[in-house]
Image (cartoon, rainbow, N blue to C red):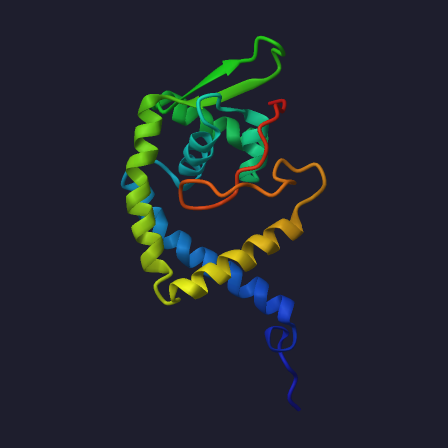
Length: 177
């Protein structure tokens, strides 16, 4: 007797499965591009997020929320980038519990140097879809992302489109480390 599999009978399971697989495949193509610059993908994520934050940088708590990682995880990544000279940390004068991270000129240069390579790798990874379908997919995934936000999340308001190669940026208010 035939029994349908989870992926055959459940649209939500197919969406989850194919999004996860596509994400892994794209990450596998982008990782070597980032690592050739001497940084890891999580470190690139920090550089991207801080570049978008501008000169003021971000509190570590807000940075971890935007990247969907724990404060403990972000502290280690930020520490390695600080030792490499790509960012600096500074305690807030108003609230000593708050530590902000901001890019150094070297960190901003590294991020901007990486962008053309990453854009090229992304274009190659997505070349199986025409530009119109890429745009439609981007909107569908953005809509899905927004539908999954939890109340109080840093990105609980729709972000403005940003420079760079993705579109999540969120609010600028301070958060504790």
